[in-house]
Length: 259
Ligand SMILES: *[C@@H]1O[C@H](CO)[C@@H](O)[C@H](O)[C@H]1NC(C)=O
Ligand SMILES: *[C@@H]1O[C@H](CO)[C@@H](O)[C@H](O)[C@H]1NC(C)=O
Ligand SMILES: *[C@@H]1O[C@H](CO)[C@@H](O)[C@H](O)[C@H]1NC(C)=O
Ligand SMILES: *[C@@H]1O[C@H](CO)[C@@H](O)[C@H](O)[C@H]1NC(C)=O
Image (cartoon, rainbow, N blue to C red):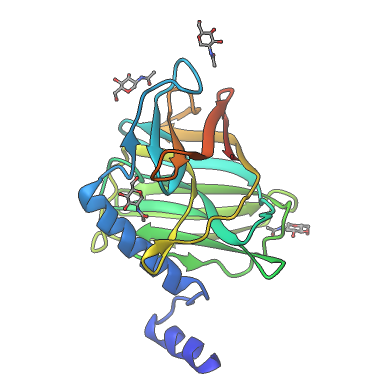
């Protein structure tokens, strides 16, 4: 296996090929496929199920909150790395343009996997449609509080930062001139839990308990805004049972609860 890891390191040049890179490459490919038929990843449903003043949509692979508008250049939120209790994986991330843009997504977050009684995590950054790369220099453990932030410095450049809220130490990646990949629209700010795909099906989705984004805010045309007015996305099975329920908590909290 060492040889194949070395081979993939060589293939991607200076970038570090993470163990899950193939999975994410596949995920990005599937997202691209999904986007063709369903630009928003989201099935519009009846509004206002959880609250009276928020639209609720449905997706089979995403749950979260999305602000839709123009001029979104930064998104941040903190959360505690969850402890999954059933076999499977999942991820939590913040992003710009995951919903209605379609040409690029700037995102950063973590994946978790519970397998054989062990939980592993990795932290990654991604400028979709490229696949995600793991950060080096950060090790996530269950219960760690991390702050995830993406910032677009232009529609083709930006940063992804993950900060250890205990130590104040951070890892970051700077994207510069990603025009050849795709340009951001700055239409969306989102806080998401995802059941990503591997191969031709979604990964087994672990019961992660609850992920609560706190201090969730975005910068819209130079002004910091909270999550008020965000569209909520519940994750449901194709037969309509809710798997993850999204709700807002005050003006800066997004609660994603495995049901
Ligand atoms: C996500 O779910 C939507 C339907 O809500 C589907 O069209 C799309 O293909 C899915 N994408 C992935 C990556 O699973
Ligand atoms: C929604 O509005 C109804 C009628 O005003 C109220 O009884 C209910 O508590 C509200 N629900 C929420 C979640 O705010
Ligand atoms: C719900 O969505 C519709 C259509 O996108 C929009 O016109 C409306 O303002 C939204 N309502 C809220 C409360 O966000
Ligand atoms: C953050 O720092 C604390 C204290 O050194 C450490 O225990 C924890 O694992 C770190 N978490 C991350 C995500 O770096």
